[in-house]
Image (cartoon, rainbow, N blue to C red; front, side, top):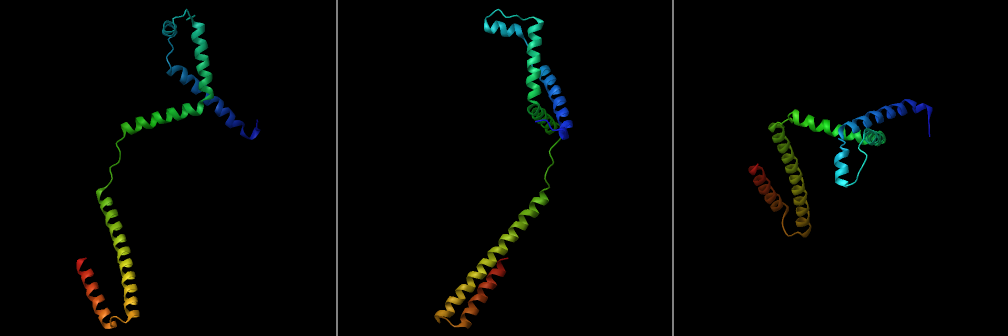
Length: 150
């Protein structure tokens, strides 16, 4: 439905359709003699037939302006990627990211381990199987061993 507020968009689509139709007729070579020989028929290969095919291609191009735009845009991106070198990543940034990730995982592991040790301490003290001083001594030794490995 026609909306006067979008009139400029309609004109832009019309012009883009015309341009894409022209591009399509210029990109696709038309050789009616080869088509006639392949078909084995006697086909009129005069200028009027070629003009009719070009007009049909232009109409198809006009209705597929969005498709033509995407195709041409991809072509431009492909040529740009060939001409401009890709940016190399800085190895120091990668190394720093790995180091940060390792430290984060190490902290999470230590927190989990500490939580589990506290639960174990609570269970041992609840059962009266070991004295609180013995639990503290064992945890101290374990903690010293963990800090010495870092």
